[in-house]
View (tube, each protein chain N blue to C red):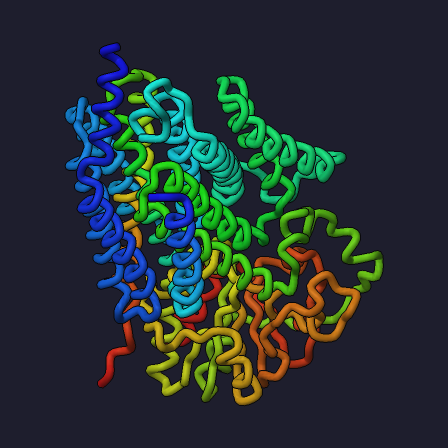
Length: 481
Length: 94
């Protein structure tokens, strides 16, 4: 009896301050929209980020204010621990490690969604989704089940993505036999269990949904290779949004629904942009296995072709005399941390009156915009950095194309060779430049797609075989003379 | 709020998201991911409800766990976005 009264009181507490609370949540939702809107240009982006912070503060304060708090010290402790860890990590992380940090953050959103879903299941009255008898409304059960499932997939998928990006697990695809059947079967089972959950709210149902979703997240990501990670990270970004939205439906909370929809569409659009930049369908990326078998690509036709080796002095001399130099960075630049010395090289060339531009492919690096952040970190002004479609017409006027740590994105096979795995992918027309310098660790390794690159063997190409950072350092030294 | 009202908000927000995100400059796609990370941690609202309520001890501790995770993301996400955005500079005009 007393329990029922208490429950009703709790339910009342949720709805008592409703109009004002709802308004506050709406405001924080609008502020989140403004946060993303700010990112339309670097000039407005910082103000946007502040809107986001204000929005989050409003959401948290409103929640604490409108609920009778039984455990304030614990909550403040939890906020302090999490906030401290997050803040220190954000301060210390190296910019080259951004992709794995983002993956790690995604996993936390996913796990938080699972925990909130399970908490709502165990104490539905507090969430206002059940009568005093503890029977959860069927509609809320669907939302809860979906929220937990998506959250769990986000969590385990992001953990795998994190391990691959951080190099703690091999980046190459891991292919299980019969994985398509296994994956589809598991997905169908999860959907079936969510449907079953509306009829039967026993613990085993929700527990099985949770466990199966953790497993499917793991299974979905292990067959996907390193260079497909931009798509995977975007996709998981999207999932974390849908998980938040599902929880928002459960809680009838406007801020969560708006945010979930924003983040969900954001991740979906980024995945689309990344797939398009690789000319691959989303399904083929998800199916995985790309770049798994290098022998399939070379096909035995690997004859020795002549190529020229250049030196740092050659590069320094040619670029000093050039009028226009276009620099194309790729993942290799990030790996060897060459961005700072690359900017130094750019500065010296500019001092010699050379016009220096940077060209960035949408899928360069391991996440969308990865190269832009690294160049910004090295103090390269953002108006010297250009996207593929904006700069591709300029290679015909370029005296030097300087390729550093990129490979597939300059491979002309994408334009000409229909049998190539990267055929149809938009690439830089570096072959139109008068001279090409190709910084590469060795002639042995091919790009991620495992295809040979005709640019290596062109008349105007000089290979600069060394670690990217070391090579650029030598060029800077040579330029100083 | 009834289901249709909530669904309407959701669908409209998807459209808003679609147009807003297409207007984000590709150079800021990494900060976009970091900030969406931070804001999707608004799920902390649910975590707070769970940890504030009486009735189930397990539920409360699950909620507190979620508060910790979400706040790592909130503080970390906004801080790292701020740090990245501070690096984007225009060319100094002489």
